[in-house]
Length: 436
Image (tube, rainbow, N blue to C red):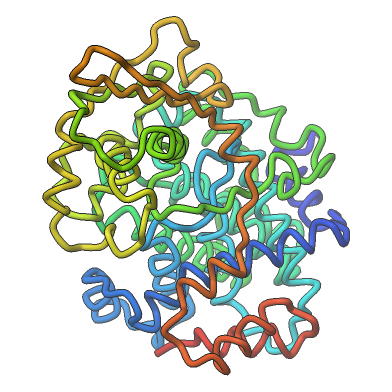
């Protein structure tokens, strides 16, 4: 009898053995996660969606509600890491699930926790390859739809579920997968991450309790239904961990609190600002070109507040030109800055028909920003997505910047624990974000 895809994956999840390099990268991911989570959880940055979420789903009531809150808070700023093959944000879902489950696992070792996280990122990247290119283009949010399965796989590894339990959990996760890109620019985008983490917790808890669900054929059905004809099921397991997806293509740690689809445009604008100076009086209009479809995520042209502005190519380019930086403080819930908005209104999107469609080859994405001056001259600069991804991000510096209002001693203690030098550090971190 042939082993189903779920059966093969269950065995792979249990048998995988990450190494020290992968664990070092996982520690970086953990630091970045806390840099995004704690400003919201500690109230350093206000988020109006958090209070109603906590009121309706109090974390102290259940592990799944805790996972829901952690997923929401860690994605609320849209500052958390991104994975190119996954085409979404794996860490927010995977770590929110694992950290919520630690409350029931007081003896968990730091190394086992890191390995479960690495396995979850691997599964996220593998799911991105297996689902094909049309899933995201069709309007589905991979962080939610693929994230719930990836996080469930990570949780199965951490909890050491049996192969049979893992098969059931993966199938339950797949049947809960949902999330629409139509929610981008609202608090519901962050809610997607929370719902995926909650779904992962529910899936493993039901499987451990002996819930009767299909063991076979569910992942195959998921890929066939939501792959829209270009799914590649064989890519789910082929070459697993060689190299590990947390290493290559690796986690991309954001340097700016906006949609990743705006970052190379911002960096092109930074170069032009430095080249021409901050005086934009002689500027007539701006064009931004990119491969067809490369603005699918950053699709809001006239944002009314900072949350929507995270997904506006026009606003981010204008901000970069005017201020030479993309500051978290300008991308909250307050109305957009009128000066930035006025310049953003002069930005035109001009897809480049000579470039391959983004759906076909997202690795070749670029943004070319061109400034047209009143004297008839123009100035242009192009930055590719690969150039943006290759530039290093200092996640510890990001943590310190985002938490700069905390007392230095407290910040130093958090930073030290995030190195996960021992098991006790892991459980102190879990206590730090325990149910309120």
